[in-house]
Length: 168
Image (cartoon, rainbow, N blue to C red; front, side, top):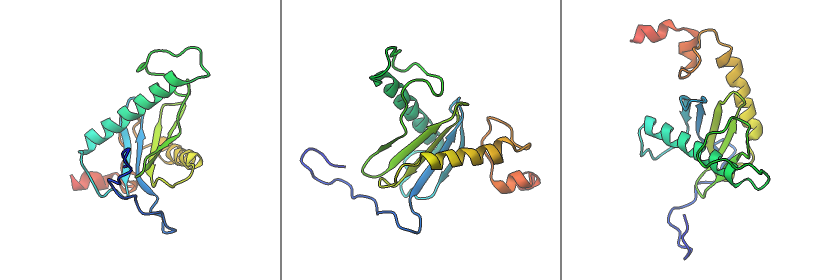
């Protein structure tokens, strides 16, 4: 982070390598703000518990969607700041970048929100987010053992649900 004087507060993250240290975290939310899936690969600092982290991320998305719709220079009807919009309505954002991470976002017409937090030098991830959504539909939504609106369990639990009960 740099202030006006240009002093460096925190170092930049390492540049991604061919070994694939691009992704830090992934979230999948439903339209009601329930975190269906959270995975992290490269998150050395944890300051919040999981519930607080999920609420904070969903709140950020809600605020950014509302803000981008309100600031849309092409729309005559601005609506009120903070009023929820249906998926696909108004102006939307795809990503934002800081000096330490890039957040890429996709919302589907059904209200599923997919978020990837990656290295700041990572390129456009819209196609990757679409592929993740296609995998979600193929392996979660079409799975007869999945109850809609519940967190996504690990593959081992879905393939053999008896494992979950044997450990309990």
